[in-house]
Length: 150
Image 1 (spheres, rainbow, N blue to C red):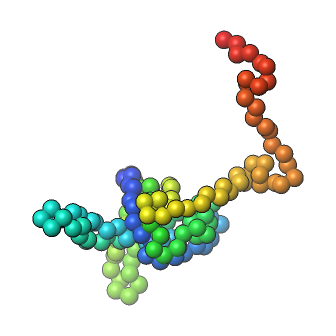
Image 2: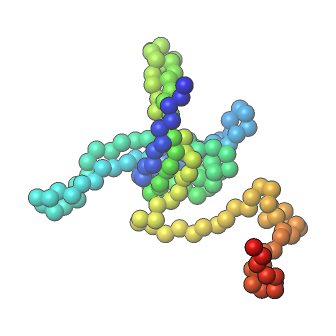
Image 3: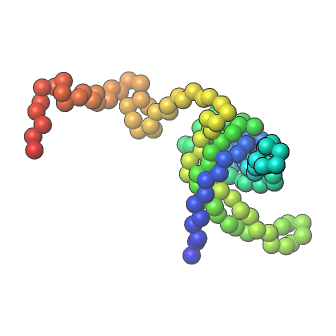
């Protein structure tokens, strides 16, 4: 049985995301996020840095490509996802090692200290994906002359 632990973190990318395609053909992006604990020293009135915790993050599918194209080292991000634990055998020592990764459901640039521009990517099967196709047009009921029946 897998324990699902939802997490949300905010921090800075420690390097550019590593982007690739797995053996099954799924896109992925991997990156590390440094989360700094800042506290106000009540005696001095000055903000002080506490310990830094590093989290490994992986994101899949279309979002992986968006992350790789949009984010780079030093960017402040907000990650919402699930904490996953795993283990592997170290090839050099033969010892079993444990891993802790965040599998991201959502990755976004933090707007706390920056501004961003949003460029919407068309849905893979939507009308914008095919420039020659025209999709449905939504018109408010008030301008169609149709009444609302109950």
